[in-house]
Length: 193
Image 1 (spheres, rainbow, N blue to C red):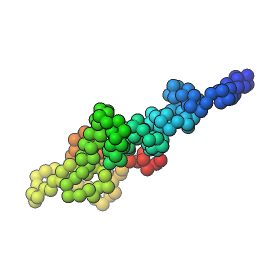
Image 2: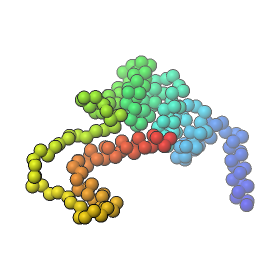
Image 3: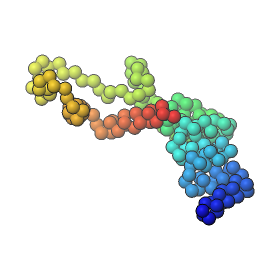
């Protein structure tokens, strides 16, 4: 009980004597980034805390509240990590208008441009920004001697059997699989916010 009272006194003391930005800085130094972001009044510090917490959408929103080269640069970094490459390029362009020849902004703009081009497929983008198949190959040989999978009887397959069958048929490089997996996870994360 004594410890609880001391804790409440410490909290109330810091709330009375420290500004919100000072309270945010204390949380930030402790690695409590979400609490820091909520406490900060300065949009740049709040955005930085959200960025460190992995909340890139919230970080971009905070950085958008400022009109400075640093704010546009950080907003571009947030957009880049969200996979919004055109928005990131636009932010880096604005940062470069305010601070010409900023090497980090030039490098990050080049990264965003390269990633945007990697998603730009010939014949139009019908994937909604998602990565498509590397290559589509048809087996035109009738009666091919390759191994085929057959299901015995009309019994339904269990989930494990379906997964095993699917995994045997997947023909992709581990790097491509991981790239698609991370893009999917990032998209899922963006939808849940």
